[in-house]
Image 1 (cartoon, one colour):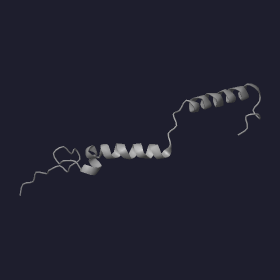
Image 2 (cartoon, one colour):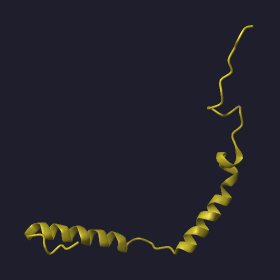
Image 3 (cartoon, helix red, strand yellow):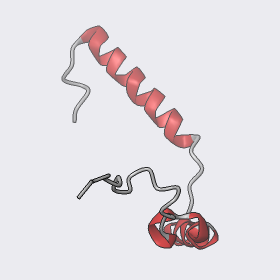
Image 4 (cartoon, rainbow, N blue to C red):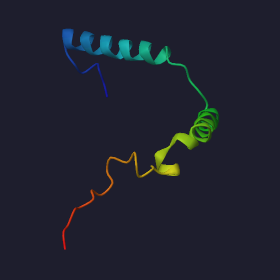
Length: 73
């Protein structure tokens, strides 16, 4: 994308946006992918016992359990 084709003040405004974005990106803390993956794996393993998708939900606390129907025969 070329900012030089934009005339006058629009070019200045576009360049200010680019500079602002680059300043934000320069302030980000970069982490290697291998370190991020290791951190994510560690977090998942530490919290696995609290994950209802892995451990299930007891029927007494499950708000989505099928409702019992009273019927008279």
